[in-house]
Length: 80
Image (cartoon, rainbow, N blue to C red; front, side, top):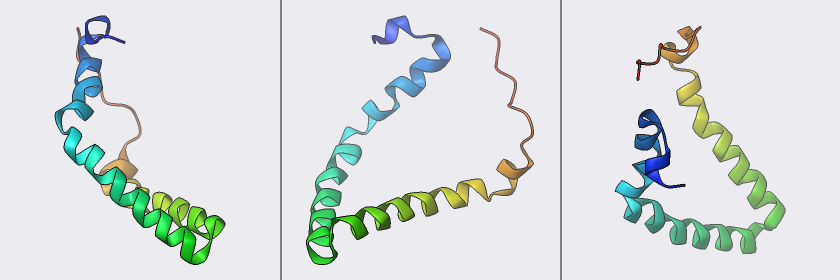
């Protein structure tokens, strides 16, 4: 989807990963290598469970912040 087809408030979210592709793409080989070594050491299934647990735990700081817990309604969207 081209950026010209997106509404104005979505374009920023659409282009965000493009700003720092070296950070996004640079970490993929590191994670793949670490996952491969871990899977060969302890097995595939335990490695997948460990990665799933790390993914769930990484959400906790965001979920447990006071601002998120106090949020009852979505913030108002600016008029376009």
